[in-house]
Length: 107
Image (cartoon, rainbow, N blue to C red; front, side, top):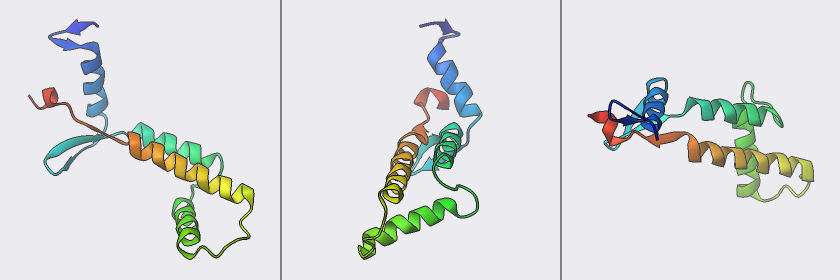
């Protein structure tokens, strides 16, 4: 790995990433919000559903209503696939949206 002024290339890339993305504090821990992941999430969801206006909220309500009520047996396979794809994309977003700020950045 390349080193520059005692920093590895990986650390330099992390520093650049963190400079261009918001930092939040959760219970004393600093996290960097990955806006690129959020953009990717919206692009992926836009391939199979509406992301404009209340599209994300509507999809979330449809899924939760079906789970809570459990009465809608007329959901088509395509509708179910869309809902499951949304949940999968949401899972990827949650996994990758924030990353801890490394302690060396606080020095």
